[in-house]
Image (tube, rainbow, N blue to C red):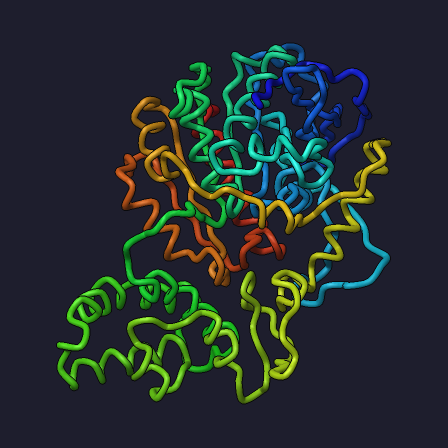
Length: 472
């Protein structure tokens, strides 16, 4: 069954006006929160992408003002993380990211890193996530798959630009985690159409933020080489004694991977005992693991093992999504949920879910649906086959559009989508390095978690957007 996008938004539109206090300015803005329905050939609504649009309202002619489209990943994740962390005008208020409240009351505050002064913002809940919905299960294959997902998102972007008369506005994309591969595919789809001869939309993208890069395709490179800098950062955070600064220690690990580890890995079992001992000693220095484990696993350090081994003397396990967090290891109780039973996500999820409920009230969103922050059913149903990988799509998009800029941003304490993996993707996909920016921050998978990291990332993102759109 084919589906198509239909501009039928008036019946589900919720609007409100607000003021953002940003860098000593008062930025007035108008918000529009709405369903974006997809209909089948019989005219029945089968699904909706839900969008939250923020327009600076004191701009006389917004027709050429940049527009930033933002979404999360999963697949199956709502946009509330980016929305209430770094992109939207309001964010979850956290006094100390390492002492997170897990019970109410929670609160929102103005986001000091918001870009609404220089571009309008559209935050997107994909079908089946957040307030987005799949109404007809028989249409699942038209939405729950890597290629299908991109077709519908491209149709949404084109429809939104048409609706608001913004086809002459520079377009920016911001995706997190699985959303990074989504962004790469989307940039190619918007400009050139998909692999099945879809309409060529001819929409160029000026800049792409890839936050926590995951291109869901093999890298053909030793996993330990890509993860070691994040393991080193984790070791530094929990056991900093006698070590250089975080940046220097992590850079040491990058140098070791480039200059010694990759060569040793290639030699494998042919490596002499003396050279192997030297490699194991260096790995112990960076990771904090003992030589018995490393002698057996130096070619493939398992991240899940590492999470439990680093602080085994304390009987603690560190977080996968942010390894600064730790909690008690419960060896006889199996984890029941990959999110709720992670030392990081299990701590900050309540604040973000409650924060979105507060945002709904502020934005006058009266649609009677619960927010699906992380929809595991969507993830399980996902068709992950792609006819063209994200790395290939990004290379094609950058070749077609010589003005496209790309920003790979990572949290150093992210053991899920590591900073080393982002560097590899940035440099092994035939991308023009003159148009690639790489940033690494002292946080985890959500690199905006924590005031220091959010400020660093926010400043770099502002610089990137201004450069991508030709602002002075």
